[in-house]
Image (cartoon, rainbow, N blue to C red; front, side):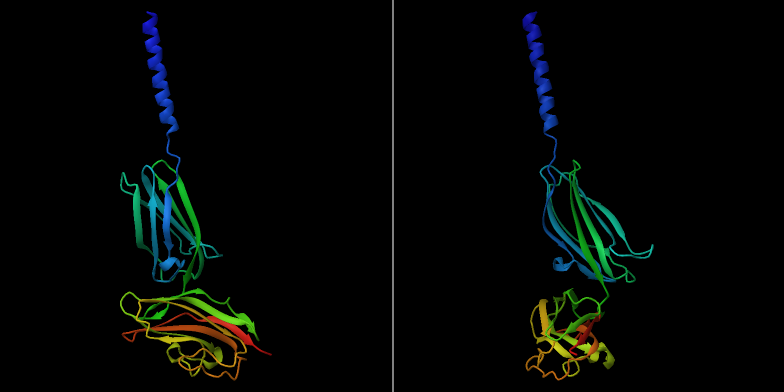
Amino acid sequence: MKIYLIKISILLFSALLLFSCKKNDKDTLKPVVTSLEIGLNNSHESHRGGDIHLEFEVTDDEELGFYTVEIEPDFKAASDAWNYQNRWDFAAGMRNVLVHSHEIAIPAEADMGVYSFKLTIGDHAGNLVVFDEAYTVLDVASGNGPEIHVENYPAENQLFENGETISVSGHVHSEFAHIAGIFIGIVSEEAGLADSLVDASNALVLYHQHNFEAFEVEYNASLVVGAVEDNNYPAPNPISNWNLGESYLLIKAVDENGSWSFSQHYHINISTK
C-alpha cells in the first residue's frame, strides 16, 4: 500500500510539474518588425487623392495574429476630417510575413497637414508592437508626369534675409518612364506666372538637371540669399536682385515622354534690406 501511495504521489507531482512548465512557457515575446516603410521610400508622405505605401517584414516565435492601422489628424481639424481605421488578420500558423500594401487611399478632399499614423502588429498570444509615426498629406502635384515628393522645405511664409540659406530636398519617382529633368526655382508672387511658364529666365534656380536615365532621382538643393549667381545648368545665371518679397519655391519634373508635373507652392519671403 505504501509503495502504491508513493507511485500515486510521484504521478501527481509529475503532472503538477508538467502543468507548471506549460504555464511558464506562455508566449511573451513580441513580434519582430524589420524593413518598415511608411510612404514610398519611407518618406512618411503622400498626396491627396493618392495612396499610402506600407511595407514591412514581421516574424514571430510562435504565430502571427494581425495588424491594424489608425490614422487621424495631428492638428485642429473639423469634426468630419478624414481619418482611417482598419485591421488585417494573418493566415493561421504564419510566423513570417512580408506585407506590401497600397490599400489605404487618401481622399482627394482630405485636409493637408500632419497626421498620426499608428501601426499595431500583434501575435496570436496578444503580444503587441506599436509604431506611432507622423505622416504628412500634401497637396496633389498637378500634371501627369513623375511623382514629386518633397521631404524638407521651408516653413510657410518663412523670412529669409541676407546670408541665410534656402533649401529643399526630396525625390522624384516614376513607375513608367525615366526621369528626364528636374527644375527647382524661386518665383516672385508678383510675377503671376503659370507653373508651366516658370523656367531659368524668370526664376532664381536652386536646381536644374537633365537626362538621369533613372526611374527615381533624389534632389537636395540650396541657395544662399545674396549669392551673385544661381545654380542653373549648364551655366549659372547672374542674380541682380534678391529683394523679391513674397515668393514661392516650385519643383517641376518631366519624364522621357515629355509629361510634366508640378509641386504645390512653398511660400517664403525674401528681403536683403
